[in-house]
Length: 301
Ligand code: UDP
Ligand code: MG
Image 1 (cartoon, protein in one colour):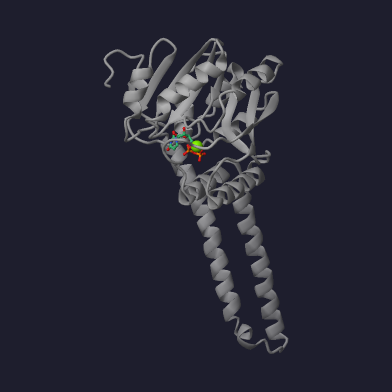
Image 2 (cartoon, protein in one colour; image 1 turned 90 degrees about the vertical axis):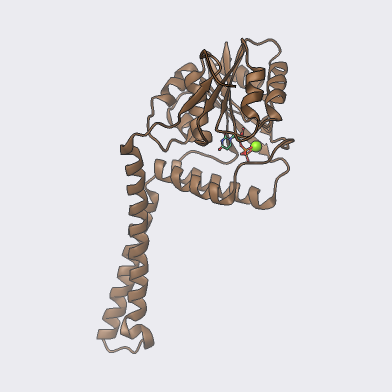
């Protein structure tokens, strides 16, 4: 049996559609669906309850904890020998799951869906998502071009991913980081038919910054490097001034001083950001809180 994990945030129209499309694409393959309602404000939970049953489970968060937390909760609830994480809006074509299953049966423990084209979306969104993936590739050391959370994980890989307890986890990188045999399948991103995308440029920037801090010390090294360059420049200016060269306003060292101050502030900011991440980790807060579960008795509709 395989598990299909679907994070859902304000997806009322998409719940029944996703269920029908996935089961029909799977053509009788034994499967369960785990919907995780990430604190939706619309009728998503009611729809999940209506669709729940023998092969469909619903878990509801007490508020919006974010897609990463929803994926984790879904994987924790999944009981299959493998799990496929897929978006609720059908932008990830359900038929591709069959190709993923084929690669899995051929021996791959992690099968990632790779976007070969992007569906209809605003130009600015496509660009910010490209920048995001380029930044992610740089900082994680994995090729993240066209990467998404549309992935199949073997039971071994699921358990490995779940053994990482850090707060700032980044599922699509972690799934590669655990290091099992890896394969890819290409897919075309379909257009979202109902509801709207949940990412804004601001959300994407915050997500990128968190993930970079979770996987890389590059910003710290960069700030040290920039500090060293600025210090060397400041020193040169000082030596030249001492040698009697007329450097105009730079001669007074004021520009160099401003430059240095800026760099120090910048470096402090980077250190502060990492400190805040450490603070988040040591607090050991739960990554999500479940308010309802269709498999628990007495749950609220
Ligand atoms: N999602 C979620 N929590 C959030 C935001 C999004 O569970 O806070 C879900 C959403 O319901 C969808 C998937 O994550 O199933 C992808 O979201 P979206 O379609 O907005 O992102 P995009 O397709 O632009 O990557
Ligand atoms: Mg989408």
